[in-house]
Picture 1 (cartoon, each protein chain N blue to C red):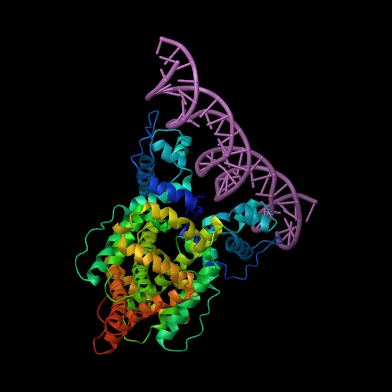
Picture 2 (picture 1 turned 180 degrees about the vertical axis):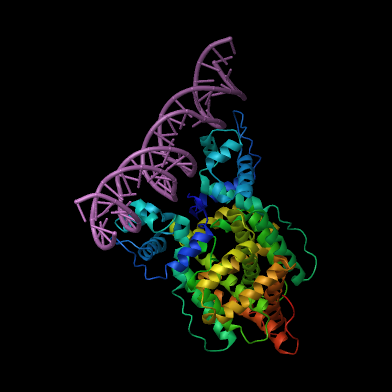
Length: 261
Length: 261
DNA sequence: CACTGGCCCGTACGCCCTACGGAACCAGCA
DNA sequence: TGCTGGTTCCGTAGGGCGTACGGGCCAGTG
């Protein structure tokens, strides 16, 4: 029903812009009126409200009451704009609270990241999420510090943080996707399954997929209950943190950090 | 440098098509020449080779030596076509091997899924990945069966499978993204960092982000070594499975399955 | 005052998806 | 044999999109 892609801008250009935009941005001549920050803000607002599909240079320009091509004075292209939007979004994260145990901290970080993705669902549709902008590096440092001093090797620290972030990302993606489907089809998640169920029941040979059938029903009724996605998120997160715990215990009980991972 | 979006087709239509396409597809009159399967195959080939960005109805039609609009006789639109491509891709997975312990089986499943994503990187760019086609349900059933009979509740089984799949998805995404960046910029991953490093060194106040700086260097040199992404993938996977192990141990040691998750 | 360089943007090109209506084709029947 | 009506195919056209290009505007300088 709609297109499907996504790339990022030229990495070198984006990187330059990312860090240069820190400057006061006070240029020489003319009255700016426009600025990188204003463009990024408008684009983010649009993407938040209508999704990355609706983000077009034309519409951003309209929102700013400006000609489309004017944007290109500040931003090389759409890809680079998205790179800027991503790093700018990371600025919302708190990177100062370093209290609590490593487990509490990872827990807090996971929830904060999840909230961020839900506030800016379009972030999950960008290819990069890896371009080292000023705010991303602050985020990275903050997250690493949560698992520092536990006896883990550097590479293990990185892996651990990636593990937690990966979990958050994948669950957030699921949440956002199902909300998106709900919006598109005008149907609630439950309504959708109530519609699809009879259809599927006619098509699927239940005896061929007994486990799927059994679990599917149980999951369906569970989701229907008061328990929200939040409970499931936290449950899975605890599993992930249990896995980290095993590693931490192993490292802190005598075995020195190995050479690699 | 390129656009960025992605939606899926009308769920109801996709669902119907998904299951109908199982039929012999032998229609009544006229010579078909074209068919849903042929279209899906051509589209998949194109997306595999050039990415989801390059997938357009025009190009698929060209590849089939057919007018663009002819495709619409068999497929309602591009979104639904992508839904079909996704389920068709899942057909590659082996869903018969049920040997080994739950841990061995999840390990095998994780690697198989990872391979699939790397073979079909465009799958990571689709929004749905959740539309219950014939092959997806076979996959789901197969994966659930790996954690069946361990004392886990149904919802816990679902969460566990999601957990592993989420991990695989997020690491595959990282791998694919960095390969994509490499292709686009014509630079190797190492080359890229060698280029960016001096630039970043000038911009970033290392003392502000001591942990990130230290870990970044270690990770960089580790990646540079013979150790491949595969090692890191397996390491993280073991952490995830450790977390599952904790849950399994808890459930098999007397505590009955709880009401929820 | 003339100039220059940054800002702004109208036009145009090439690509995309797809609604619509008509052409080509062929099985079966009269 | 000739017709007919459903099927398959596709040309045209309309509305988006990103962005290359070149020109107009104006503040401040020399």
